[in-house]
Image (cartoon, rainbow, N blue to C red; front, side, top):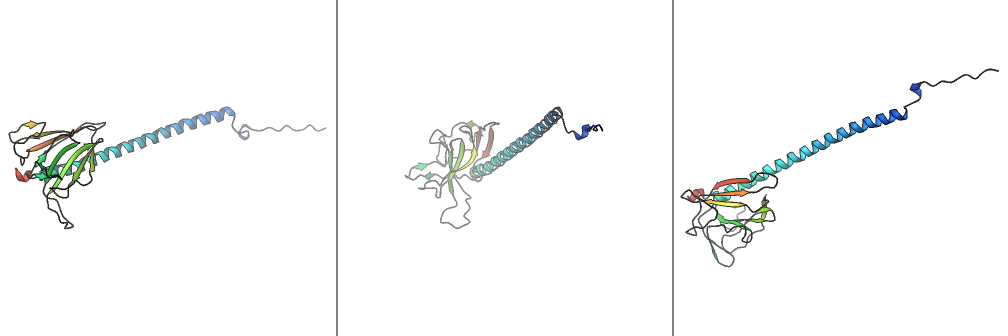
Length: 207
């Protein structure tokens, strides 16, 4: 009788062993984990950069609006809806209904030819962690238009007022209703960062 021949299988034809598969999976897991960590770091860095860029743009927009309002402030008194007289610059503090500052400014562009003056009464209020700005269609006897958030402020902003004698005061108490300070300093606490401090001249054309 012929003996059956023995069939041998080489190692290369037998496939991977269980140990080799486990080692391969472990290496793949390490590589995948590293790639995921790198991707997460890149996304976090992008989000942080975008947040920082948005905050810088927000600060610049506020700075432009705030300095323009103060620079064009006029020594003109106004009246509210009830006819009560208001000083040219009113700063009762945010504890009074959230009102921080109210003034009348010139230079209000009228591109659509609306029946209104070139003077605009504006006010700033602090409410719900935001600094709001609202304008009035008329300086006297009108209600304010809906307010717009212009900046995030973690707590109530602090104001200081510089008078003609060069001194700074934490409250504005003019001798005359038409009097304006020389400059106003506003300090805005920011969440997760340093406070924003701005010093602006007031009523440049009327000093």
